[in-house]
Length: 420
Image (cartoon, rainbow, N blue to C red; front, side, top):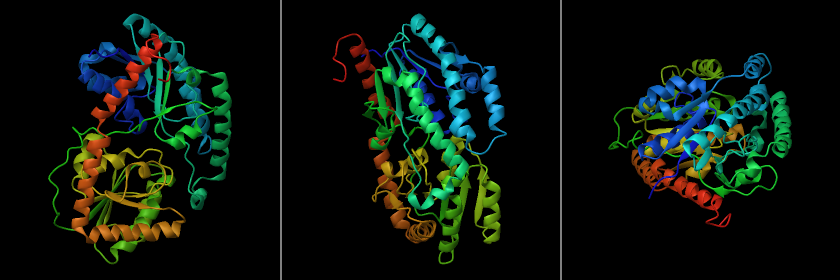
């Protein structure tokens, strides 16, 4: 069966940026791996990375440059209160990028005879899309959002940031009335019902998980009971909503009864405070801050660990959970947001977040349980790997997306009734 000709449009497509920027990169990589006529349009700040990663595909890559208004907004965000970038300047910069991409996308659609345009990011369900009337049907998503903090943790977001986010969501509702990209898309995809409910207006969407795992990179090694102290890992940005401070306190409680180690992979504004907390608790010999680690290296580092812990309180997705499962590592996480979509009792431990004190205690108990039971770690890890192979392999994910591509093509050509 022949492949559709696809244009991927995103602000970023990058392994270096991480997070949602991985998603367009994976779609482009896998489409080209299968020989599909695929093209990508994104911001010039990822040009060098993409050209180095795909030297034979440079003719298929298109880029937009920064506009003066984007540089002005970025400079403003560095001087204004926390939350301004996320709530105000970030969305405005993104919309400016998309407006610039729109005219280029029309030309690519025309010149390359594109069948489908796919906008995989931003994953925010409320952020409007400036892509419409490109000359080919447009798929947006899968999106993932609609998050709130657990009721007992709303103080993790300061008042100024909370007000900015509230205002930004109101502005987004209005912007989606004026900017019709999502309303005119051939198909909207969402990761879960929470995200469906967060879409502006009464837009309909279909369910498809946005994250997946590259099983060629996250290769399971023959896991066995490791000698030495049990080693736990955290992976992610060091920001307040990741609750790494709670993890450190929980770890300190658990190691009073069971010697163990904790590796923290990631960087961010909370790092200095967290390192001071580790020093104050006398954990400097058992907790190691590794800073940011590239994904290619991270997989190897995680194979030296026994379990992943993600106490995040505002995690829409949580791709690192799936990556740990792919490496046959058991996972401890909060039952809130994305991790609860991936984990169950067969492959990890989910903890309800009611209050900081309760979460610290329950997290400590779960860490101690896995530290003391090597057979349980192996059993949970093996079940996690099997679940990833069944449900979250990127190759299967692309198969699913190809079905959507073909469907909107046929609907666009009048071969199928819409929403059939």
